[in-house]
Image (cartoon, rainbow, N blue to C red):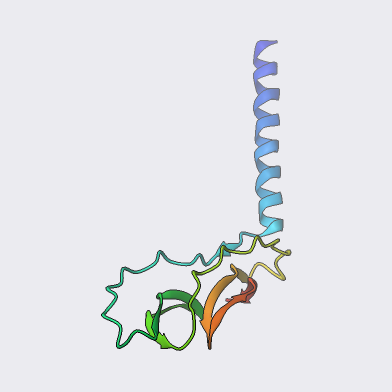
Length: 121
């Protein structure tokens, strides 16, 4: 009797494992392309009192993250980069897509939010 019970438990465990693998396979495995950690920068002396520093930051370009070096701009106030926007990630179009989260980039005279998106591998 004990042997039958052990066999039944083993069979049930094997079924549960197979079911879990089948469900994971059907859903696909999605890969995020997280933003790398910020790079250390040495801020040079400003060329004049009207210049403000825009810190370096990562932006998504094409198919990878690209580091935008910090630089000075003239005649405008440079606020700190805003806090990230909380995004709701929509379902992936297919298992061949990867997610790139939203992020801010300095454009012209302000921080602009670029919404997260799925990209095809």
